[in-house]
Amino acid sequence: MENLETISLNDVKTPKTVEEFRENLRKYYTCLGDPKKKEELFVQQLNKVKIDELNSLSDLYGLHPEPMICPKVDWNMDDVHNHMDKTGQIMSCNGFFDDENNYTLYESQKDHSRYGNPSSVKIDNQILREFFVKTLGDFSGYVSKVLN
Image: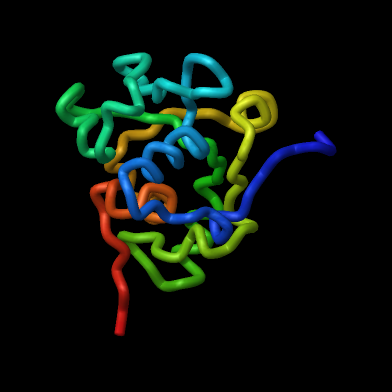
C-alpha cells in the first residue's frame, strides 16, 4: 500500500469543456475497456456507456431512469454525520469534501478496487453533489451554492 495513488479534491481541475468533462470521467470514475483509453463509463444498470457520447452527466437519464455510477472516492457515513453535527446542518452536508480527512480519492482504479470500497451511487446522491460539481463542473447537472 506504500505506492497508493490518491489525490486531493483541491487538486482536481474542474472541467470547463466537454472534453475536460470526459477526461475527468475517465480519471475519477470507474471505467471499462482498455485501461489506457478508458472508453466506457461503468453504469450499474447498463454496464458500460461510451464516454465520448456523453456531453453531461444528465445524459445518463436518457439511458436509465436512475443511473448509478462508481466514483473512485471513499467516505464514511459516520464522518458525514460528524460533519453535519459540527456545522449545524440537518438536511445537508455542505463542505464535507473541503476536509481531506473525510475522504480518499483514488487516482488509480486498480488501487480503488484493491484498497477502497467501490460502490455505485445514484447520480442524484446528495452527499456526492459537491464531489460531482468539483470533478464534473457544469456538466454534473449541479451548481455550487455560493454564499455572499
